[in-house]
Structures are given as C-alpha cells and as structure tokens.
Image 1 (cartoon, rainbow, N blue to C red):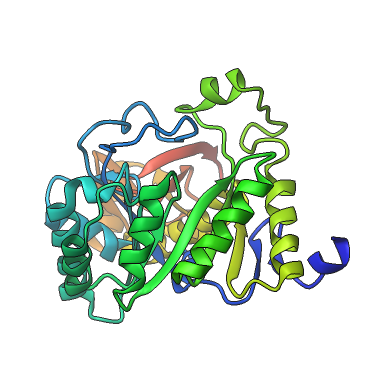
Image 2 (cartoon, rainbow, N blue to C red):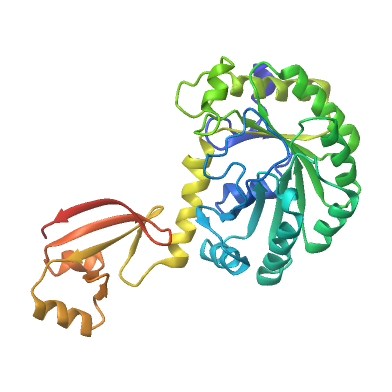
Length: 345
C-alpha cells in the first residue's frame, strides 16, 4: 500500500490528498474562496455521527459561514464580504427546504455571475427528478451525495442524468473499508465522477455518540483510525483501477487551512480605515492621549471615534509614540476580539 500512496497528490496531514482531479468545489475551498451556506438544520435522517451543534441540529435556521442570515440579502452580503468565488450549500439537508435552497442559488448567480461555483450536499432522501431539474435551472454546478442507504443511489442516478458534476461524500468511519469500497464501485457504475472521504470528526454534537460506539480521539478533533481507513480505501481504488477521483480531507483542514484563508479574504474585503491585517486577523490601536491630541488626529483623518474610543492604526500609534491598547480580532461582523494588550511606544 505504501508504494501506491506515494503517488497521491497533496498533503494527507494538512490539505488532504487525492487520486485524479479535485472537484472544482474543493479547489475553491482550498483557496478559502468558498462560503458555507447552511440552509437549514432540518434533516429527515438521523446519522449517529452527524457533527452539527445543538444550536443548529434540527433547527430551521440559515447561516452563511458563522453569521445568522435573516433573509436572502444577508446571504448575498456575507458572501460578498468574504470575496467568495463559490459557495457550498449544506445543512441538515438543504433539500428539506428546497425552495429556500433554489432561491439562494438563483440569488448568488444573479449577484456574482454564472462563473460563481455552487455545490450542494444531500443524502438524496428527498431528491426527486423535478427537484433536481429545478436545482440545475437555478444554477447548481455540482452535487455531492452522502450515501446513507439505497435512496442515495437512486438520487445519484437522478443526478447523473442532470449534466452537472456529481460525486459522493462520506465520512471514513474506522473499519468500514469494505463498505466504502463497495459504495465507490456502485457510485462509479451509476456515473459519479468523484468521491470525498472526510476524516471522522469529533464535535459537540456527536462526541457522546462516538464514544458510546468505542471511537476515540487523540487530538480532540479526529477519530483514531479514520485517516488509515481512508488511505486504505484509496489504495484499493488504485489497485483495482477504478476510474474515479478520490479525495481524502483531514478534520484539521477546516480550521488550519480553509477557515483561516477565508478569514484572510474577509479581512481584505471588510478592513476599516484604522485596521491593519495580520494573517487572518485585523488589528488596531485604541489610543490613550489627551483631548487636544485626539481631536487633531480625528480632524486630520488619522484617527476615528469608534464606540466612544479614539482608534487608529497600530503602526501610526507607535510612530507617534502614543500609549495605546493593541486590539486583535477575527474580521467578523461584528469583530470578534481575541486579544488586547497595553502598549507603550
């Protein structure tokens, strides 16, 4: 197996690794250029490994990345704020709120053009031929079916006739190599073009369920044995010569790579005049100066009054030798402060 795995593209520990070509949705995700649109927490299935948090699971709420969306304008605004070039439509099961998913897809295509790439996740439990046609007409570019039963293969067959990119996306549950390989064989026969194997992830929503079934984690995120299961499946796909792209995505990738890159793009798009960008963070200085100096800075456009505080860039505060508080934050709306530090220049 080791000889075969040396031919994999990518980095299995950080970015993930793959056989063949990555789906377009994954390419954009690696750039941090995809927004995650959580259409609803409603889902007709009850997967024991579902990672959704208690605040989302079963609740009919919509989020774009980490932001609650009250209407379609909120969705478009947040996608624009992240400089996204595509979006992943997820849930729950977005097909459980098909009209909402279609409205979002149409709005994104109208706002950002036909090159804006959109993929959607579903188990296929609720997918019909008419629903698939409506999704494609709205502008869906790619669909990923999570195999949970025979209904998922029926949905794959429907999707395979639609003309868009079709794939399978499942967690690599430790010890399920045989089941995953059989699913890949069947999906390939139906017409799937790619498979994503996600490292089984521990979360607030599924931790108890995983522990009760004997799974454990060494790093608080990934299930022990999941990575090895995915790689063994990929080796078997290569050995059998199955004509399909397979991608393994590690659990730590979301926070270590995708989330940080998306925040870096958001920082560029939403930077305030007094903010500086530091990686995936923004920073600024809250200055401690007498009223006359503060007034001169504000009048001169070198400082601003924000929340009752006089703020400017950290660089300018240091150059002027001003005592100030350095503030670092995630570039969310509103900013999520993660560090404050007294500075004496």
